[in-house]
Length: 325
View 1 (tube, rainbow, N blue to C red):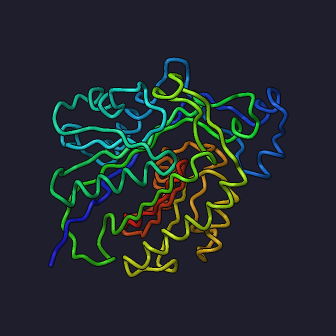
View 2 (spheres, rainbow, N blue to C red):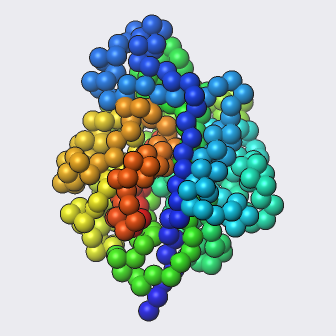
């Protein structure tokens, strides 16, 4: 008996030209390259140029993904864009990407789950495709977090960067086993009781301003590993797989220590972990697709590989996805 799977046809990424190093930040706030690297693993991050918006980054990543997949934009009937930094309060940034690609059919909308956004977007697109509401989807994570940072807050301004990544998913038939190509299972969670540990102190309904990112770093770290590993175990159980079967672990790129601790708890070998946080910083919803595109471009991730995605973000939100490339 066959089932519908959401199969990855291609991926792409875009990073702004401007690179901001730890040394440059150390000249502006009370920090140092050694301090940042030791606690986060971050060495540099990319910053969007003036007049370069989230939709611009997302469009370029989408174009790269379409080219990598070898498909035309007109074949896309669903765009799901994960972002916490939209161009405008409305319309959805996804509709601006849709317009930039010259697509006038189908549906495009945003998802807001902060750093978990890409995993939530994959799960959403997967349900659309498996349910028959769409045939081919663009799933994008794009952020300009530099626009919501307090550049005087050394605890947060050193962590984040801008960027975008995208994948093309297509509904195809599979056999319903873990050997199928495509998304095998997704698991999403949220708990709003943790809001004040990681949030932005503004918004249209509250302050009528964008606000700045605020974070209780130690509290986030304390919860992260347990929450992340919990949904991953759920994914293994649902798919009949285990950590031993995973070819590549592609986590949200927030902090090297969190990534290392999660991999160790799951008994995933370090050589199976895709790590880009040193070059990109935390790009929120863009971090997983950026890491995917990096590992595909350098030949690590190949067709047939079992890839594990996971993320945790403000709210708290967290989730995991297992897919066979």
